Image (cartoon, rainbow, N blue to C red; front, side):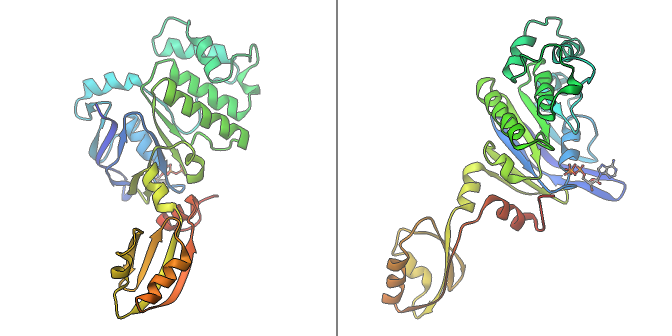
Length: 305
Ligand code: ATP
């Protein structure tokens, strides 16, 4: 099995409203898949559908090798999936250990042996008799992740896990996810409306807008798209592309007399080369796109609310 999740034209409609529109996404095994979209884009809907909380209107999916149509196999593989959808389900009047014990019973794991190790893994081994209602939001979130680990999942689905956390809490969750991915080989699907927050850990990205998956790419592809570029507009007898072909620049033509050159280049040498070939430069500018700008350009509008 190469992929933990593949969706095939996955569609979810609420009456006339289409919340998911023919989504084809792939979460490779071992990935940390950042699922990015503005509020209301359809992230939670997709997560609810693949977690079996809602049925798709059309299309289907394959989860850990089990096809949607194969209900028996699907319910078997669901045992290897952990999910935190919307608010983490923890009991506020119990301690961390009691919550873990309760979760072990729910998932049918009669041994409580691994609880201390798991609490220690998420940095909650010293919380003793402290009740969860007195935990910070970050501690609760880490506890809810520990609770999903009781079932030894291969695939964890987290819906906006850093929502409402302070910067320190965000760093802790990020480090925990990276550690789980590396040390326990857990594949992640993580939704967020802030691309920058996932950029330090995601290996793959899917961008959703108005229920449509508008782009899916790897972290290195995203990096390449965001890196420095120089825009040049030049006209003359020779075609701009003919002159650029004489160099080892990586470039893209935007129109016959306009191009984007990627990476670090010597601007003076470039201008001289163009002049020597009889081209007149009417515009030159540098663009260094950050992730949020990339996201805004992709889906439009404001993203951080
Ligand atoms: P957020 O971060 O705000 O939760 P999201 O990307 O997770 O955003 P969804 O919760 O998936 O978005 O919602 C997608 C759209 O579907 C929204 O416009 C929402 O109002 C609509 N929607 C979700 N659930 C229902 C429902 N049960 N009935 C009708 N519309 C719904």
